[in-house]
Length: 595
Image: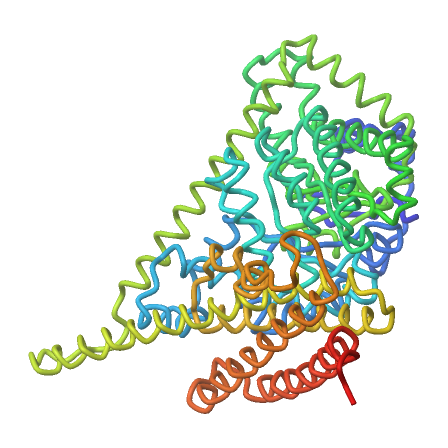
């Protein structure tokens, strides 16, 4: 491991005289201060060394500028970035500057899209693009990294049911397997975490400050996995991280220590954040060594990795890589804002830690904080409230920015009354067309959702293994088609209707028919009727692809080549289903009264 390297005089990580030993006291390392007099060796690539030490390097930033300019690909290739996190503050900053969003905002305005739907379209489009950029990393790491996170509306953080619903909507909207849906770790959010994990989604649990809440998050994750396993989900496909916030802890504790003002209180500044995070990692190790987790691991469950969030140093007197270096623990994720990533790439170091002694020092630090009058439970409660408040404010700013730009007129308009009347008529017609397109595509999306479930149910009940395997493969294809349609809807600015998607007209139709002679149970006729229903649905889907293919000739938001491929696949699916239907009909109906 590289020891601390010599810093440039005048930089934030340079210390002179007696103050040079202070970062060691803060980080909890017990190195001999005299070691600092020895010229340390420099690493030619600190981020490569951090990655080699088992820490996943993620970027805490995303914008269309970052995506369109190729900078994210560059960071992946040269700076060892293997994931991206976002939050409402990041999106608000991205939308407030630059012109990369102008074309999409213009199209959304022409369709009469409201601000809330526009925010959803803009942010999910960026996240989807980020997911696709990171897809090779996702494949290379078997799904561990290559992740992009998007957060549910922070205004829902105290409403579990609304959080669950929006998490599912975001998952459907982005439609990429390397997505993480971020859910705040409020008390209400714990139930949402369990429900979403139980449904097979991958989750980034965010805004964790206290050890007690972290234990509850781990429990919520394991409860969700247990239910997911019972529901038949593949546990190896469910991933999660727990985002433990770091620098904000020092900011709040230091503020209270300065208010106390005693020499002893001031000596404790800058130590709470690392102490808290190190004890959190001990909680993680203890939990994953228990029988409950070991049973899940045997079933294929992936551990919920600790993620160190808020790693940007707020106090300029502290080393600018303090939290990254101090939490370089194998098997964790370190998500860094661009400035911190650049700082670590330039002069980051990896100390040789003694975990037991660090944790001993961490426990002693909290005893000392209590002795001088800092109520750490009150600190973490305040940080959760402030964190949610900050995100809600950023969300409001994001909505206001988008609303303002939707209402802005970027093209000169004629003062002629006739022109104004014509423009009004064109706008009204465009709005009506967009509304009808939304109804049409949401109907087909509902069919795809229902068709997937019906195919899976038919496959599970099918006694012929070969045919069951073919049906399961078809179910996966139909699910991929559903995600493709959802992405096209987003590209077209069409709002997702969760009510229709929840019903799924194909599943509803098959459930109402009940022409198999049995009201609730299956009969030999069930296979025939269900295959007929799915075959009808695939033919309807092909009609949808053909409709969109016509639109693609005049709308560059639609990929004509992709639609051609989907049409070919629909034809293949229809052929396969017809063959299976004929065999099922012959098996069930064709052996009596024939010559």
